[in-house]
Amino acid sequence: MSESSLKNILEAALLAAGEPLSLARLQALFGEGEDHRPGTAELKQALEALRADYEGRGIELKEVAGGFRIQVRPALAPWIGRLWEEKPPRYSRALLETLALIAYRQPITRGEIEEIRGVSVSSSIIRTLLERDWVRVVGHREVPGRPAMYGTTRAFLDYFNLRTLDELPSLAKLEALAEGETAPLPLEPEMPAATATPVAMVDEAGALAAEVEAGEAAEPAPDVLH
Image (cartoon, rainbow, N blue to C red; front, side, top):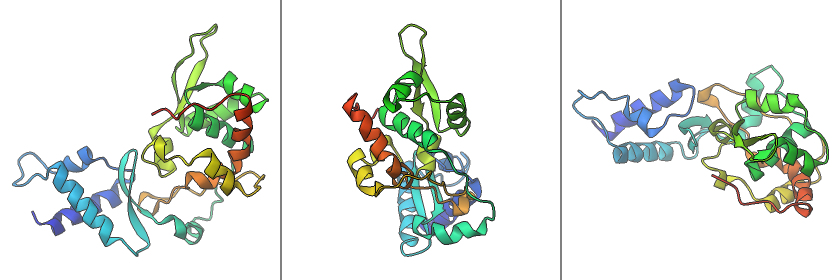
């Protein structure tokens, strides 16, 4: 099979899938009985060629935690977002602060979040984050009551255009990007996979930097867990 044919198959699959595809799922497109079943190295080479084809265009091939996807370049989101009449969902500052603390301090309990923020965390916030599949229960703290510990999910990484937690911007960088923002921050509307352009973490978490940094005085932040 020529590289051109392989690229066409991968491109069509990525556009049709509606979600990121891993190398294993891409390889599964080719049956065992076919004359040529590309290996991992060949798939990576074809994907890299496809990525190069998109240079300078409005779409890009992006690798996230769940695999590879074709998406609109984030810089074009203000224009492409106008295709959807529905207003993007808005989340409260309390929810975004809670999400930022889970992302940077996981695993963390609800009580620990409340101690850092200085206020209680409503059940609706935790429920929303769980329903969005941005966070999950990763265990229970071995203390009286065995409270649940929360961590982020692969869906969280995919939505925020990240491959691993290592790609989360540093708190110092977030503080520099915050620029005094205090209002609740809108999220971009979710788009079909072929035009997906998830919000960059720095766009939403920038306004949270001051609150997360404020918790540093009470408790040093541990390294991000993987």
